[in-house]
Length: 357
Image (cartoon, rainbow, N blue to C red; front, top):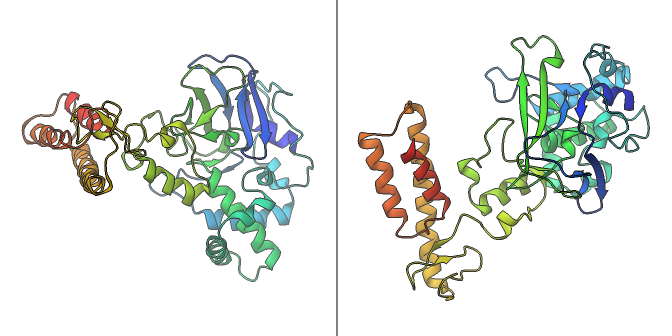
């Protein structure tokens, strides 16, 4: 098993280490100082499909789980180990850097090392497990209960770990932050005839001190984009998605403090009121519940209007600045927003980006 996994690992930086804790499971951290812009891991997927972001994608987690289970049980691991070319040309293995003890048996399916593991499946709501079972059953006619259970586990492994074009082992160890210090990029050659045509690269976006975790955002797709997607600019929206998809509540600083969501103080009119505590950082007053309900309603409306406005501009984007009715629409929306939100709010940030283009 280790040999199979290592052949999918093109490069790993010597400062990367794998850690484990009861709270966070497996994770990656820095063994020594890692500078911003450092490539940490380059890896090929061990199960691959046409990118879920491209037209004609073959990505269907229930079908992939079912087919994988059937192939693995039929041929043990031969179909996996024979999938890639047996060549070491130009490959830096850096063997011994990644903890290999987590893969204890060559007869163990490779996805068993990913979250959620056998004992963690039970923590997923029963309704979700029953829903997944029905989905995989449609691709596993006449399968016994053991096969169905294995396929359901892999289904959730895919849900929690899949990148647009495949399933990875080592990069999947990265935990999430809404304010990540690293990102994952996908690189694809002009042809997709060989699974090695798709490669994933983990790169730092900030200096990482010794002992600090290497964190990526589960809210981004594999691209060079570092800004949060519009639909996840609020902590509440991020928590809903992460809880539904990955079964955890994010405790990052950005979510705990609702950063970028401060509203204008109705008392002093200049201070920023924290979205969670309802306290103004300038005058110290706490906004009462009645006023807060009105603020919350209005800011929610403005958030929707901002998303709709920006999305409507996307198809018409051309080099240069906005002009005419488009520019007026954005400027007017920002003026209305500033009557309710602080200038540090994400709505202002997004609209300023549109005006500056």
